[in-house]
Length: 418
Image (tube, one colour):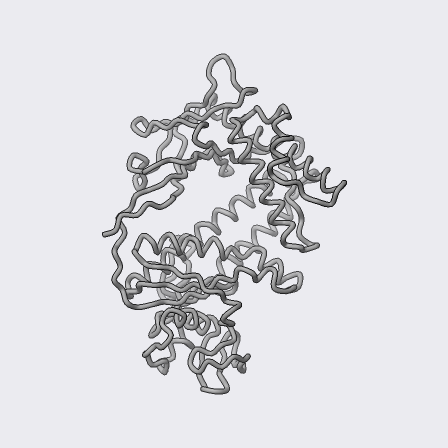
């Protein structure tokens, strides 16, 4: 066994959800939205006059002189400005005329509850009594207390007493109630993998992932993500308010985000467990890092790429593989042209399509699912001269593993309920 330290976010329920505690958290959350809105107005004004987005440093300097800055702990206010600055930078780098810049946080005439982050000098944790003290800003302090005392419950599967270090605490409104997120370093005993096999993983939109272990391939369809995106986007549009997103639209966005996060965690966990069961020691994952900047994919294509959370899925695979003692290598897909290179003969060409996603190579006659072919090319970057016989048809007929909405888990296609 190998001792490792990894970063985890542990979610806990608020157990002392009394009126006073909830009222204080509501004040902090709405103050967070106020700071966001004032900083958003400032960036917008500078953008209109200069055509440039202000840097994070000058924006913080300006915001420190605003009254709302002292509604929260200084580090908490800085975290909100950092989030806004990053969101603006991400929007600007897209260079997409149809993409909208980060908006204001408002629900009619009210400010919604924003997530507030407390760093090292903004909280005090007592794991023995399962309590955490969260600092109020100067403007919100009253004669009774300058902090909010929260009691929490992490549930039976998590425990903060064994963590190395809690780095941040976040209060998050999940649409129904407040919950606490503890960002901490956790010591784990990872298996010292001696697996000699290698696996390749190709990430995609239609198929969330394709995995090749040489003599076997696995396919993870992304139907669930597409269905959720279509449904929740329609609900959001139908409930848009006159002065910005309605409360139901905000709830819809949060619900969609939580479902996507659960899906990605579940799929990445299954990918790593399937590799561990097959004695895999190294996983090569395709990293389409520049795909959004390579070319214009059209309005619909650009929207799909913008929604594609490949970086999140890749990071989930990396830290889950680390816990199993499996190495993960990122492969530049563009440089290797994995999608058009045929793994059997090395021919780089768009072979004839016989069905959707199923191709036949003109040179060697290999029949393969395009995503599985790409995954095998990823694997070959670690094992350049594979010895397995591909005539078994695994590249054309992979084992399909579906996400079951009723159980929230991944299972073989034949075991998923209709």
